[in-house]
Picture 1 (cartoon, rainbow, N blue to C red):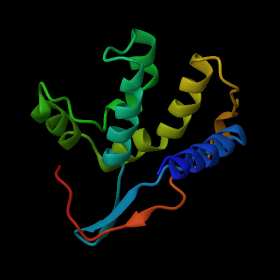
Picture 2: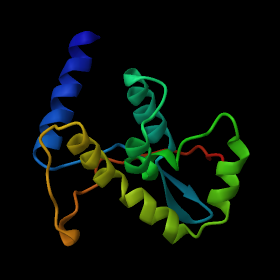
Picture 3: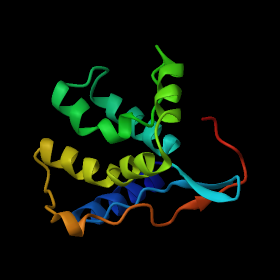
Picture 4: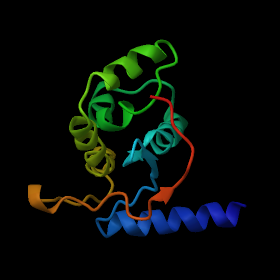
Amino acid sequence: FTADVMALYGTVLASLNRGECEPVWLELEERGRVVTVVDEWCEGFCLGMRLWGDELEEPLAEILEPILFFTVDLDAPEAGFERRAAMSQQAIAALQQQIPAAVFELRAHFGLPGVTFADDAKPAAGKGKRSGGNKRRH
């Protein structure tokens, strides 16, 4: 198990060093259209962030806003669902597209080798998406 985790870590690190961010997101068909679901990835990312401690510094919360948007606040879970329900699909998709840039911003915050992108050359996101037949909560 440890060898597999470290191999995955090495693969992810090498991708980030090349300026690639390829989170694995779920795609579901809902009402005849394909919907990208990033919630589970964002929840897992935030669980990993908790290894540094429970409280996020203000700069980190700002950097992570596109990721935090798709997580559930256990103190007020309905508020997040209501906020998302009030948004257009285009606005939600725009936030999803900001996730890879947030990952690189976080790297830069911690002084790790960063990658700078022009606005028209943002990292590719979501390659390797998985499909699934289960409906998600919204």
